[in-house]
Length: 410
Ligand SMILES: [Zn+2]
Image (cartoon, rainbow, N blue to C red; front, side):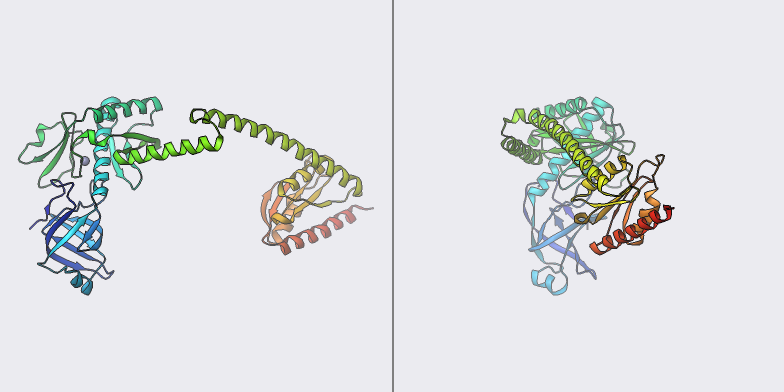
């Protein structure tokens, strides 16, 4: 005998008593319990299953198996006996009605949204996903402009305010051909459920819904993004939308407090701050380049002509600037940054006299000593696994540099 499904007629009922019809246990410590009746909605139609307890044991999944509903719980053998879950026994079960209510709100909002999108945009809904935080539908049209999204939102909100009834038809006894269904129903045997939003929208659907659109209260499209050849529309409805509104309001309050400005001025204050930061960064950049140029002149004056200049900097950024400044003076250099376990090698542009391809000379040496990095003929940067590897690389580089100088002497 098929499980009697109570969740459509008693959406707000939290507790129910039912007789255990059968129990199957598996090797993973789970059992599948079939009851003669249930308030637990099983996974299906894009809507996740209900949660709750069977004789005090949490329900981890609810699945449909033919005409039956299987409640999966983590208990077998003695644990089941102890809870009184044995074939023929009547047990008490509890359903998380807040979770059910939330799912019904998102699901009803999906019907509304899909119907408005089809009517105003000619957009067809390809699929529906009800997630833990957001729900989404996939459409067969490319992403819309924000003004179009606002118009869709406005129409959904109008239908919510006008409080349309949500009705359910069972076929048979009713004839499905009498309903202008938004989408062809998938071929099914048995009774087809047609959910109607009072003359506005008709869909074949096995999910749970609220009784009228007014009880959704609030609706918001949070994001529209390109997805495959169409787009994905994320939305919130009912209590989720209220919770999100409260979260955003708190963010605005916190941002106002952090910037010391009224909420309406936050954006202009942030834009002005961003511009100021850019100006400061530009000045800082110029100052760092000037410091590197000054340091390079000192090193150039001290180091004999023709030798590779070796130096050290506090940061890899400073090392790069110094090496490039030395290259502008016609010098080849290796500048290390022990704090970052990195080093750079730089030479004047390849076309200039005295230039040497640093990647083939110091780049190869860096790799030999565990360095990883990259660059080209005029600039090379490498990171080393530890201080010892960096030190050995610098020593080898000094030896190679001295040999090269010696080979150039008459
Ligand atoms: Zn539905």
